[in-house]
Image: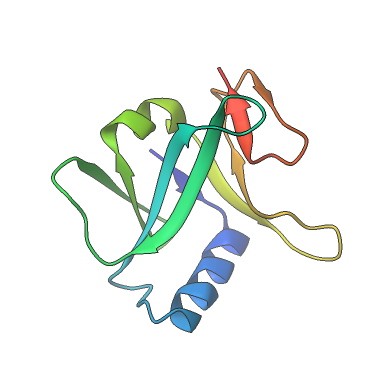
Length: 109
């Protein structure tokens, strides 16, 4: 399962509305792809549709879809949001990551 912090929920809902998505019916697609300075890179975008290969989770009122391959890397992850002057935006708190890069956008196992 993937969890969503209160602040990440608020920011995601705001951004979804600004981009023409409905936070009550649409999804946040979370995934992993090769790349970044640590080997694997997080992917986050809004989506209106899910596929048969997706797993669907709901936490804190947020619907999240993850493809099955990415889910193996993201089990137990919490999506957080870091705002303010030095904020990084959306942050993945991933207990599976052995190391992460300085910006927090990539990781390795």
